[in-house]
Length: 193
Image (cartoon, rainbow, N blue to C red; front, side, top):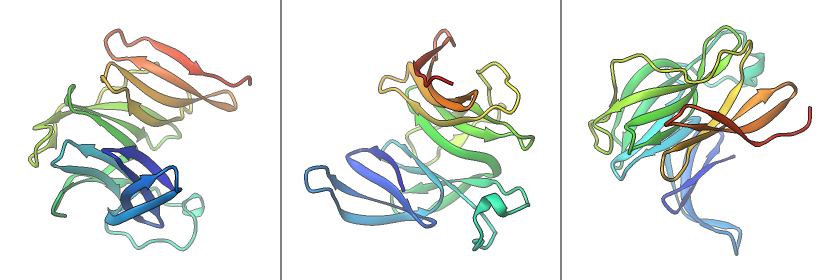
């Protein structure tokens, strides 16, 4: 499953392993493939390494997660370019993420454990270095509360002034943009309900 294209590399997940390689749209191939780590989502922190969301301390279930009755949450792991790992947050409740170095911020999808998945913004310290860490301040939830909210796939714009994401509106997932200066939300793409 393709996860994202960044730094000239296509990142994808095959089973529980995140790999990356050079993507040729013309030839429709991925070459020079390297395995990064086991995980569900990935975001880059400059040239220093990657943030990865990974299930920790559990055996992989042979049943799809929708049939697994217990609540499991990924840990947020930092992996440097040499493969060294450091856990930044255990049981983070996160399922997807993106990082904006200019803002020293991480946008993530946060599962509140009560039926909603929300957009959360985390402050980062030492961004762009191998000493990166989550700030001790709690995350901010910039969107108005909505019952059984369902936000997915947060991605910063190239200049980090906008944050794009999908959100369930009725029976559809619409693509929205959050202006990070004014905190105004506007529709980018909406399907008729």
